[in-house]
Each structure stands twice: as C-alpha cells, then as structure tokens.
Amino acid sequence: MTNVVKLNDVEVDPQAQMQADFEALKNAYISKPAPTYNDRKEVLTKLKNSLIENEQGIYDALKHDYGYRSEFDTLISDVMPSVAAIDYALKNLKKWMKPSKRHSGLVLAPSSVTVHYQPLGVVGVITPWNFPFFLALGPAIQALAAGNRVMIKMSEFTPHANQMIREVVKPISDHVIIVEGEAEMGAAFSALPFDHLIFTGSAAVGKLVAKTAADNLTPITLELGGKSPTIIDDDIDINAAVDAVIIGKSTNSGQICVAPDYVFVPKNREQEFVDAFLMRYKEYHLSGNNTNTQTQIVSDRQFDRLDRFLKDAKIKGAEVHAVKEREEGDGRLIFPHLLTNVTEDMSVLQEEIFGSILPVLTYSNLDEVISYINDRPRPLALYIMSTNKKLIDRVLKNTHSGGVSINDTAMHVMADDAPFGGVGNSGIGHYHGPEGFQTFSKAKTVLHSPAWLPKNRFILKNRDFVFKVLRSVFLR
Image 1 (cartoon, rainbow, N blue to C red):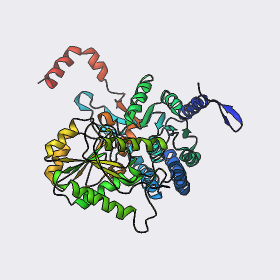
Image 2 (cartoon, rainbow, N blue to C red; image 1 turned 180 degrees about the horizontal axis):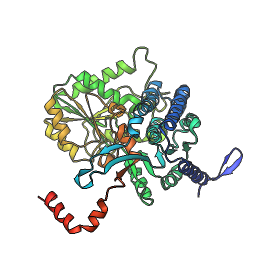
Image 3 (tube, rainbow, N blue to C red; image 1 turned 135 degrees about the vertical axis):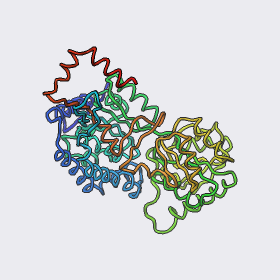
Image 4 (cartoon, rainbow, N blue to C red; image 1 turned 45 degrees about the vertical axis):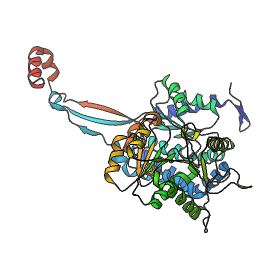
C-alpha cells in the first residue's frame, strides 16, 4: 500500500498520480503522433537552455546529495554530456528522420521500399543515483529526438537533484514528467505499459525490471555494470597508464558503472604501478590549488558497503595501499585504496566495487588475462593500456565487453556518435549515436507499388507459370 502525500495541501496517492501522469503523456502523444522536425527542435532547444540556466543549481543540488561532490565531476559527467547530447541530436535530427531507401529486389520491382522511423509513444527512463542528470536526460534526449514523450523515475538517494531536474524540465513539462519514490514506486513504474523502458543500474534490479516489463511485452534497454577490467601491457609507460586509471577511478570517486574495477599488471611491474598511482594521485588531488577535490560516497549505505569490502580483504590477507588514511571530519570521503595479494574469496573480486577501491592482479602472459576475463560475466567496459597493435587486436578479438577504451578509461561513454551499451550480464541494447534514435523509434518498412501495375492480378491468374519462373531464377 502506497503512502498518501500532500501536494499543494491536497492528499495524493503517488501511484495514482503516476498513473494519471502516464495517461496524460499517452494522450498527449496520441493527439500529435508525428511531431515535425521543428516541433522536436523546439523541445530540445528549450531543454538545452534550461540546463544552462540552471547550471549552478545543478552543482549545488549534487553537493547537497553527496555531502560533497566536486563541480568538475558534475560538469564532466552530468551537465556537459547532457548539453552535448542535445547539440548532437539537433545536428543529426533531419538526417535521422528522413526515410531511408532500401533495395526492392527483382521480385518486388518496380515497387519501392523505404524505412520510416516512427515515434513509439511514451518512453520510461529509470535513473540511478550516480549521474542523475545525464542518466536521466541522456536517454530522454534521444527519445524526445525520436518524437516520444518521456517519464523519468529518479533515484530516492538524490532528492536535491530530483527537485532540480524538475526545474530543468519545467519548460517542456508537457513532454517530460518526473517521478520520485522508493522501491515500491520503482516497481510500479516499471509495470506501466510503456512503449519502451530503459533502466540503468545493477544487474540484480535489472532482472526484476525485465521480468515486470515482460508482463506488458514492453521492449527494454538495460544498462547495467559489472567488473570492468584494465590490462596494462609490459611495455607501456607506467605514468601514462596510471593517469588513465586515475581518471576513471577518481571521477565521482569511482561511483561509475564503467569505472575500472580491477587492474592486471605484469608481475614485474606491480610495485611500480602501486607507487606511481599513489604518488600521482597525491600530486593531482592533494597538492597545489586544486579546489575540485574528490567527491564523497553518496550515502552511508554505500560507504558501509565499501568499508566492508576493505575489512573483508584485510582479514583475508590483502595488502592495502591507501592514498590517504581517513581523518576526523572527512565525512563519507574515501580516498583510493589499492589492494594487492587479493584472492578469489574476497568480496572485491566477487562483486562490482562501484567506489574508490582498486584490486591489483598480476599476470605472466596475456593468455592468463584473457582466460580470466572470459571465465566471468561479460563486463560493461574493458580497458587496454598498450601501444602494441598486435596485443590490442588480440584482446579485442578474444574478449567481449560493452565497450573498450585504449589508453583511456570511461571516456568512451562520451562518444556521442557511437552506441553505448552492455552485453550479457552488463546489459541489453544500446543508446547514444544513431542507434539511440533507432532504439526509441519503430523502424517501419513501407512497400509502395504503383497503382497501375497489374502484378497481383498476373500472379493470381498465372500461378503455375510464376512458380516455374521463380524456381529457375532463385533456385539455380
């Protein structure tokens, strides 16, 4: 049973309100099922302007939710990619909307075949807490570009961000509706008969969303996570490799679905890697006049989970290399902890870390690494630190992952013109790029035959002759 809340001094059942909002969006779509290019451009432009106008409010909201979140992290992970996604959609929208010509073939000649991309209707977006703006608006932007209406379920762990995103979408409130609430509301949200549903979050919750959506035969896109590996080649400059890993592991304090989850280094370079990581992290984050210090862990629950990982690893024999030990007044701040001498029975090698802990594994030859990765669920991302083309090609061809960055980490997610998505346990489907527009569209084949063409009459009156001709042409 849902709790009754007061909205403008009127008691409202949140689930009943959500159902009414869904029906309103559905009716709005039905009233205008084929929005023009100018219609879509207007909606996206309003959203972009509102994002820019509310920039500081977005920074402040996420600082409140996290205890502290650096403006750099919010800019690079939430604000900038959202604006860039709108710019990319506006640049390509006319091309995407244009029907594409296809080959009709001998049997259908002289008829024409085209594929039209039609809006689906109402798209549902379920958003996690780690990048609440971009992971809400990124899919929404592509769904709006495809001509849909959108309903977004925000995380209960980012209440200030949720209120700010309401402000951001206010100019397009007839196209986008924000929903809040805890697990019960999330379950009810995924049970709505959306025309497409995209979920970003853990694999465990993703399975529940998929099961619920199946009752309505709702098509789904699942953006999950997993344990994304990093492979460091024996010949790579260790400082270049470390800098790339630090970017992916320090941004949002590693609370990223594509953060490096563990790193493989050659046996003879383990200590070199650890020393370089600790030294360079301190240089970048603990010295100088850098005011964009490290983001805190989002909640006590997540902080305690990471603390349990560390305690479990220590008890089972791991060696801990902390950039900086915790001090009174740090709040939920956890500086990176590198772990060596890790074993398979430790939680850090069994569960997705999603934070500033990095297990370091060693290897003697690449076959060990490839076998280790392939024996486990397919990750959302894989990182290769190497200048050896043969090694890179070998890893690319012999492993599966949602995406790959070479001599970089996490940044491939910002490639607007390329698809982003997982594989196997790390997700289903794609968005970003033209693939995103297609995900939120119905690709409808249209066969157009001339009215004067007596083809059907001829086939109906001469079936035996047509049968012989078709066999002689196609079954040679």
